[in-house]
Length: 167
Image (cartoon, rainbow, N blue to C red):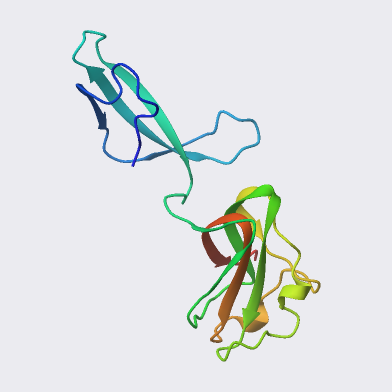
């Protein structure tokens, strides 16, 4: 899934790139940034430059995303049950984009206190952002009950969601 980049000598023909087994979680070189996944590769070409070692980085849990343009898009889950007291997202938006979340009963009706209108927009780039509504972030009253989650995205990538406990 790593592309060789713009066509130039040694990038598309008569070369090799072998990715080492396993991705390794490493500390980001950016101060304050979350850890990242590192992939190591050996590369070489037929015209004598020798081999080199390269490191590629990916966001944690960032292999695939649901993506929406600035005009928007949405996703509604099948009914799920969870344990925990807060919902966190791994997502990235542009400066103009955002993510809104609504919790629904299994028939698709918004749960009072967890509607889109009550959700604080999430924007930026985070692997562990707690979603909040006007009532706060506590979703424990819905723990163990079947719900649906509606995600409304504008110029955003949603990589994953999870329910966790702060206790």
